[in-house]
Length: 148
Image 1 (cartoon, rainbow, N blue to C red):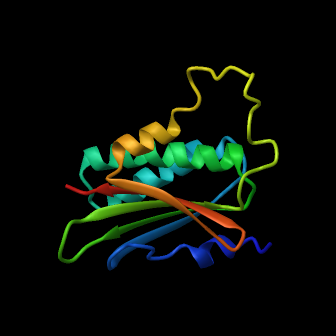
Image 2: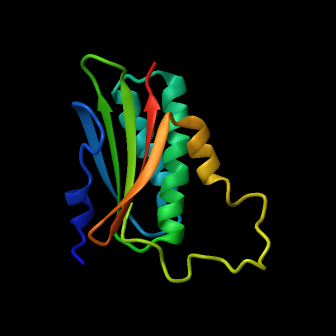
Image 3: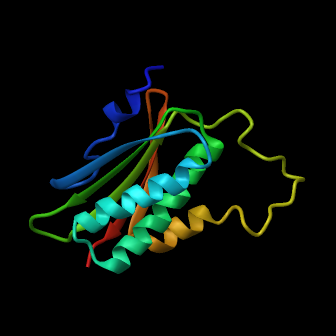
């Protein structure tokens, strides 16, 4: 697979006109999550988003990037975009990866710790809508946050 392929498949899937976009390749190491979180915070602050939206977005980004780095095959890409113009403003968060790693699923008899397994609940709680789509060997998970 081509390392740049995820960017070919991320796009305006169910999103109106975009007025800003940020792409960030995700290193496939756990330490990448903190670096990406800080970079995303800087970008979202530069877009003059409300502090509450930035806080929610950084939490959603952390959960989605952690999932990609921990449970999926590389390469992976974070795409942030916002809509403008008429209608409700939204922030789209997308993480595209090469699909689940062979060892990503824990056996059913291994107890989950309280610190793991809450990512999808957090994404659901903070987004106005979310989902995933598969395309040509890649999976994109996305979440839309309303911008006040």
